[in-house]
Length: 421
Ligand code: NDP
Image 1: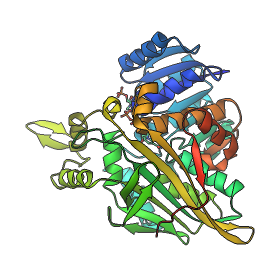
Image 2 (image 1 turned 60 degrees about the vertical axis):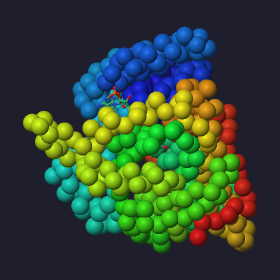
Image 3 (image 1 turned 90 degrees about the horizontal axis):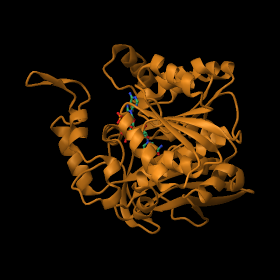
């Protein structure tokens, strides 16, 4: 049917690319491009050696911080869509290149600047903190601002087609379509019951992950943001197939888009599970300055502590063989149907070792990479089609939900869930 250009060849991209190759009637051609071309070549060789896919795979080197390089690549590959699975730092440059070439754009995480000390960015950030009331470094305003330009160019951007954001947002649209007249509250619960055996490691890009979890928490209530200290709000929850876990309230990007797109919603919260050992390690690293994102001089060389830490930590892509256990990610909705109160939970359980057997990755990369492929399929097949910049919950959830069942992330609806107080 068409050709996709995938930027990035890390943990999430590794899964998305293999799933695109499995879905070879939609993805006839796949071009994988990243700064380190050898990683793209290795993945191409792995897929070709398995001999199961009819997709034609090519590879290229690109620095996605450079718009001109991206434009040259897009013009030579001529893809139907560009799937950005590099880092959130590259979102705007890749969107610029897609605009210049008239090609659809997709990603799994919203824009965040690499340099949070850039005075131009700081000015806008400080204003946003005051106006909106949350202090996370990432927000949707940067990418939503491209809406009219994408619309005028006759192309679309689909933002946030991972698991959270992504599947959790599609669950919200599905709940609204089939189970509620009004949704009043959404609690997104992200539980990783996996154990990789290391004292400390992150399940996806350490820099992005540690920035996110060490930030203030926040939630949306009655039309405004309420900000909390990091890990200030803790709850316990008994997750199906995982068991009892501590979970903590975090700021998370889909709260921002769901508050805009789910009419009448009164409260949206996001919780993620962490073990005590993870939190103690993170606090210690933060206290000694290892999470700093600004350059410091070390024996005559400039280093950025969090980037150096990334070099020391296990590569998330290497956790696959050693991670055992399951993830359980989903949403609890409360609201009204036919005049009566109702609550449901929609969730997926994913087994780390099953993911490893299928694609050589742990479940965090899997649960993000599969929806990245599904989002791209929605766009390439025209099942989701519009002009402008959109979040996934703005489209019909049914074909996406059907695809989740087919492509490895089956979901369950619990009509009598335990609620979070
Ligand atoms: P990795 O660090 O494993 O991979 C990042 C990839 O981006 C690498 O292949 C890297 O290539 C490439 N890259 C980085 N900078 C550039 C650049 N300037 N030009 C070209 N390529 C570049 O990250 P993950 O796979 O763990 O995460 C990928 C994305 O998925 C992130 O945006 C993350 O936030 C998001 N994510 C979303 C989730 C969701 O549920 N929505 C959950 C988990 C992650 P190289 O090695 O050559 O530098």
